Length: 397
Image (cartoon, rainbow, N blue to C red):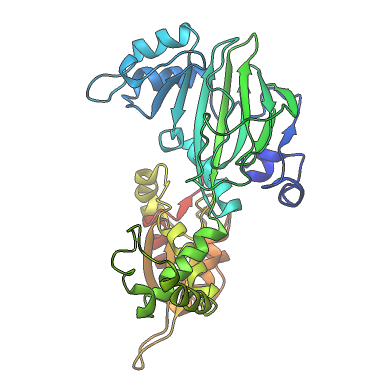
């Protein structure tokens, strides 16, 4: 089964999630299927990663709610972790946090990519291995939405108030001036269960009488504030009024703010001229261009190009996100289509757009299935290029 967003939140549908829960309230899914998430990760794989991957802090962090632990307790001066010290701290009740394992473990990378397709946002993982009857963090809220996948063991979660609704990254939790509020919900996640916790919702979690392994999947979404800031930036590229310096001495006590009010109001009026499409296209291109390839076994795939023929079983790489942009000809030249995918942009003749789009979106096809008017040689040339770029792959026969 494809481990995508639909699978992650089943039996809740994607439509229900975005309508009733996303950025609104937490969601708990109890399944009674202990192995539901077991293919994503295991305690044994965490053990291997800590002991043999040669990781550094903060890729590995060790925390305990009632004890101060800093990196010097489990890492060397060069930043590499001391795996023996990490395991000793774990044995004494501390939680091991593995950040960014999706960059190290292909199956986690594929899982995150599938969620990125659903959210148009970067997705990251933090993995928490907590000893029985222990707690890693005190109550807090996160600056991004999370999906919590309980893989092994059990953990009790407590939900409190939302002191800051949908906080920005700059509105991080401060335990000294932000009250956690009254407890509003409490539940135990068992293996195969899931919880969605929107950003700003205060929570904490304690392992029960079993060692707990869960994956916290962070959704690094763009906000409307991000879009508006970018819109103003784009306006400033074309309007010197936005680029002029603030008045000299504006930080002095005697400065009269009223002298700036007229221009401030004028600039606000100009913001109405901002266009949505250029900003949204910029965000799209930025998301796609920074989504680096996850082309597993690419060396073996290229080696198979010598066997490419009309009956070869082919497929688009899973979870591709791409854009095909038409480029009209200039001075009587040939129309082209720009392919933007996996951090790469390249141009191809416009007449390959139809078979190109088919190849980048199809889970199974052969050369003969490609639509359009390409001849056999043209189809083979197109697929050779896409295999070399890590966008199409051979399937096992």
